[in-house]
Length: 306
Image 1 (cartoon, rainbow, N blue to C red):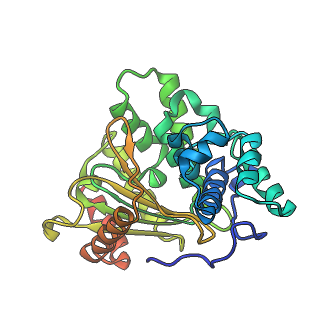
Image 2 (image 1 turned 180 degrees about the vertical axis):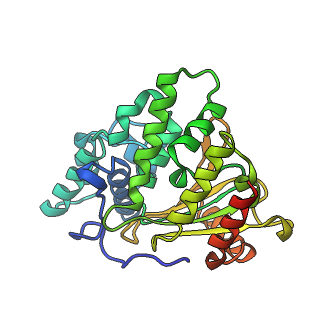
């Protein structure tokens, strides 16, 4: 499953759908990525180095690099100075890019949960909430977007043993809010491959795990959700190193986002060769796992044995 949306200019109306349910903002990630990609293209067209560009806005070369990678926002005044330096005189393009600069500094809905959202997770949430396609592989847990509240609560307690009840509930609420991407219009497409071990491990106890399995049986019937299971008898497989998530952003103009979540942080490999490598891993996992049509049967069997 490596299809992309129709290719068009990122500034064409309707190409980039950044909506999330209930009119909430998808956050600053998409505007930052779009703005950064365009600024990089303009700079390279003029043969200007990042160091020279940084001098224009009294910034370092590394700041220009982060700006072009969409990792943080930029003052509209600095964007205007860069556009002038790059020779952009078209008023429509300047206005569009300056509007993106404003959006890039707009708080996202999940910043309400800022006390439980570390910086590395903000990066992921921005991509997740804007994504048109999410592909993931999980070894130890059911993927976050497929969890029930009780399962999420038990899983979060394991990861945050010192958190009080209020913090746990805020983390659970945030995780449940994230699931809305699967039910918006149009919904995000989710393709998850899960190791059988994650489905056999009774996180939260037997009752919680049974409810989680029943939820998976129901949700994998949705056309926007594909779930595959790698059974024990499959032996070794392509991603034994840990969980992998790749997110595809709408519009066909931006690179895919790879996230490798770790204990207290995440890595985001962004070199094209690395992104391609992880797509290859997920494609191989899809071949090594049981086909999606077998998933309900496998889940029913595990449910009966749990």
